[in-house]
Image (tube, rainbow, N blue to C red; front, side):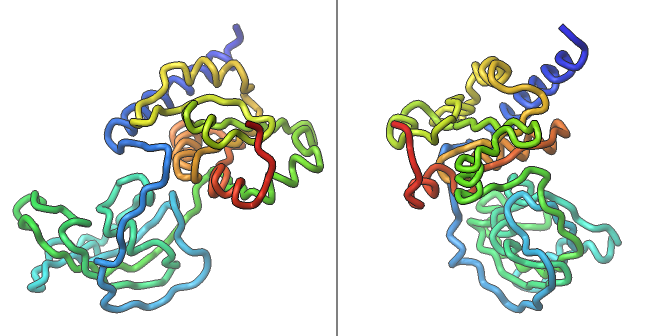
Length: 267
């Protein structure tokens, strides 16, 4: 067994440990979860320019946080320190995930978040009482897209039709990471390997590593496929951010969008 293979295996083991922790804390499901954004009140907004924030973008911001009575509990301007995080990974409260989506560099937004999308009935330390509505004034300083590539149904179909899976010695591997029940319900895209990453409760599949190594070589281009694209993007992001790997893709909209577009499915 060569040194590169051992290094690759160790990387996958590291990823599995990261994903296991993530699955326990974030309760990954094989479907997309969305928050109700009707309860966030936009108080003012100045639009920015360039690319818009999407899921898993890395974001740098300045912000001021205050209670409804105007009492400030945090101010990054005073600290002269940017706050950096990656959206879509539960690194910030849900209200931020919703309110910042679609913003651009230079954009500013002031918004009020209800307790259910902030710190709930627990509060946060001495500065944020339980059941507090919070007002944030956020300025987007910089954004950076994730390292993985989001491929849509049309692009994947083109790869299949033009037989690009071996183009320029690039081997594309399709991996459907859903559960066996989901495969049975919808079928799978032709040529896909069926390797469940998580079960229906969000627990990591203990056989994932074994099956992944069996079908994927280190330099392969891998396209992860989930139900609606959310879980596959989480997995793809983990490969990029935690392992520094390349050539990782996620099918946008997942198998559901593929079916809606009328594309072929193998039952």
